[in-house]
Amino acid sequence: MNRISSQLGSRLALVSLDGTRRPAPPALVLVGHGSRDPRALSTIRTLMDRVRELRPGLPVHLGHIELNEPLLSDTLADLGTGDAVLVPLLLSRGYHVKQDIPEAAAASSARTRTAGPLGPHPLLVETLHERLAEAGWRAPLDDAERRASGVVLAAAGSRDPDAAVDTRRTAALLAERLGVPVVPAYASAAAPTVPDAVRALAARGRHRVAVASYFTAPGRFSTECAAAAPWIAAAPLGAHPAMARLVLHRYDQACARSLSTEPVLASA
Image 1 (spheres, rainbow, N blue to C red):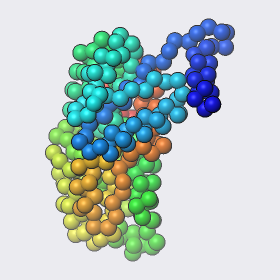
Image 2 (tube, helix red, strand yellow):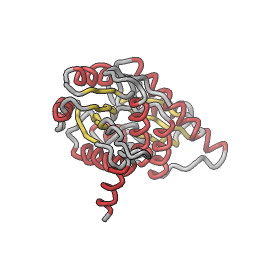
Image 3 (spheres, helix red, strand yellow):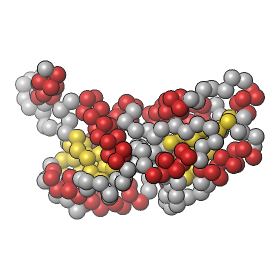
Image 4 (cartoon, rainbow, N blue to C red):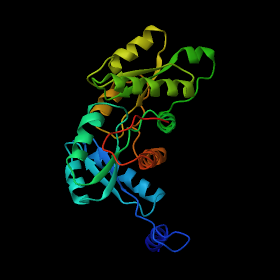
């Protein structure tokens, strides 16, 4: 019954008040990086389901940059000459956003628009905060506990300076939310590492340190970063409901622009 209701609702959404048929919306293509960890693909598929629940009737597809099938090039080939909006499941600007995804779009026959990366954005901060709370984070009880507390925002890392700018912005937003210092750190390609960031906070007298996992899904990097936590480590962002809302926000932003294969900068 739920499936029939959803199908009926999606068909009615394509009909305007005067009875004429509205044009079908562009397909939403989630672009994942890809991972050898099977939990990553399972997480992304759950996120896809949540996006579909929020926007019944919207065609939602998945394509990977590497490591997992379907690859983005194959997903775009299956779309033929249709309209599509590519939404990177990436958290900052970097090579994949600036080069890999636009090149795959340009090589396809589909008419594409490429959204900006998911971050920085307040919905990511909402998700990070809830993941920390799930892991055992609580607000410091007094000034002494506040002076002893801190968070390391563990991210993948990139050689692109714009990626570091985006990650620092998220760290600043999370620090405002938590009321304690949040230090960005990286699993690869950038400094500091998570252990270095933990040591830097300890040198400032902050020994109540949590690691916030700034990864879209579980994988090697998130596991390694969590292992460096001296206290608690939060789960990755995953298929949190706020992530599904953010995906649709980026999709809607891209739909408001003219057809193009060039990504926009992330914005709130």
